[in-house]
Image (tube, rainbow, N blue to C red; front, side, top):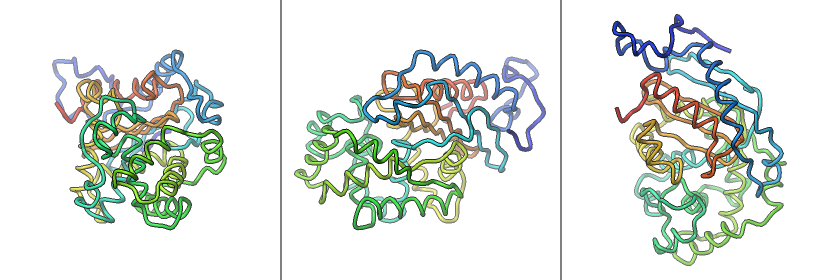
Length: 326
């Protein structure tokens, strides 16, 4: 599907000596180019794995690929399994951070969580122990659980609903809580997250660990399509009278260095876009002043990032010269 697309030209036009910079960027992308890229991305799915510690995620089709590119002018280009709904999982983390920055302010939020990159896995207890109980950043589990403890509401359900309504109102997305996915998450104990929450509590960064964990499980099961995810991404792209530009900048800065766990620094060098992934295969990338790229493909690489999603964003960033790092 495509709305108001520009005249077609090959992405490789940048090699043309008559080419000039203004013809690149997200506005240069055509439907045919995206369709070709999705076909190539399906090949990338072949070596990926589905997560097994959440039973419903293990039932996904590893060949699903969906992409929506949302442009700041309101135009969009989309392809693949675009009607497929999926849980955001860790992709919700930057939007929890944005919500709390808006609600509580910078000082209150970063007294609970740091802004530093981690070279450890997203659920590392050793990292939290080395940091004396303060989460390294909001994009790993320890940071997200700590921030879940600051969401308004008496329990996980009410806190999730407050966040859901706020995000839907501001982004015009239609996120819903996937109750079946929530039950699947609860069906197998996550001892690592429990240990993280208990250490946060004993270190003074969490008041009610069980409520925070329940909140974290709820918000990770907020679900939508790539259209909803692209709309969410636009909250971090364009000037919005309801959201502080400074808070958007903070979230994007943290995404560049922390959004893809151990792969973040390499991805920043190769791609240069603020990006967040989730174990469901969801992924969103921000192209400041231009738009957002939302992907869904459940086959993951060894670090827990969507193989097809990484491939698509990297190709778009390189071919359209999107990197914020030049």
